Length: 587
Image 1 (tube, one colour):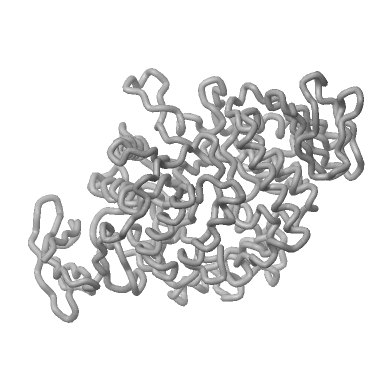
Image 2: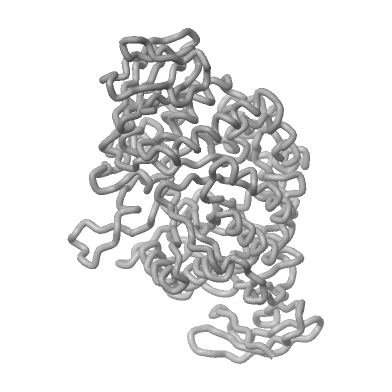
């Protein structure tokens, strides 16, 4: 027998361990905990019943083979035969990140199928594979941000052992793994935590559901629930980094914020397992203190100590540069100085007016103290593609030469660049918002809400894909047959060449933002970025441009060009064809 326990302070009189049709009373312990014994037979299904109520899955269930509404099954993470004993971890500084969704990365939509595509990522030049959330949720298909069993791995992807196989296979190829986790809310369907204890609070709200109780009565155990989940992924599944979804929605008024406490525990675990472990935040606050080192002295200007955060302002400026779109939050980034600003500091809004928010927003970054690798920059992400009305990628909006120009600016920047799956070959498949809610009423509300939201922005509601329609997820699967076909093959070669050059030339991965120079001719639609002895030049116009590169003596040749017509003139200027990019530097 194995001891099993559950925190259920809301149980008034009893908690039963449900095994088949039998209910075995559990013993009450201090602090709202209840304890019992579970048979050690592999595959034993169990649940908990509070005060004679219906069976509920274990809040810390490691496996939910029948989904969040089913019973839990005990899972021993130590039973896997790891082969990564020599894995020394991945270094986030200088790393290139690749975001993927297991369910649509391949036709099969499983971890095992994804393993077969890992060599593509190695050849591309990826260092860290970021996997979108895998916590168990109802149905088969979804983005994963409505997970409800945070300790369990979504069974349609293959379950927990398949995740371990995937991580082991990544490490065998020199790839680190970052897992996207969601702690700011849980999904509505199959969410039984509120029956067990004060996991949620009405004092705060999030756009996606009830906020976690991180600072009210009973919050000690709620925080422990989150912190133990963090260390589970890093320790038991050998994950190298966690991407923390929307940390600005983790409302926490304690003197020791959850995120700082999280970083402390991860730092201790990294010392224990003898490899680096990383925490990457998604935050809407534009606050450099998120990634400023902790300090024992609260007056010394220390921060939360997380290692990196997404920099959406960089995306927004690049998107406006390439597409010319200026609706919604893109409006401010039509400013002629926006591109130069975000290539030299990650926050365009750093105490400046945000027209979308109708207030000032953000805080300046001290680029002498914080290097660029602390900020994850991108041209495309699951959010920026999937939250468009029809999920159209950048490859649907601009010509291949402009895609190449955007890639050149991103992949030679001082930031930690991140690609979204299929971006590297200009995938023609959209990535749309899809769900598979099993609750009919919830399914109806999601479908109607999606159409209503975009209709209010001027879209024909008939054009907005129904998230519940199986065709929506099918359209969103990558078509790997495109990789070797034009024009995709050419763009893929360009991405590979840029990432190879980034590794070979230290200038192109130098994280010191104060060393970056940007000359953006807004009217001519040309950009020249200074990266040490290198110049990264893009011409977004339709005709050729003659670009001044500064002191010609430092430049000897065009080391990489999208268009073979790019050449240096006798006086050291760069003749660059329209809609193309080039990197100029020492031989």
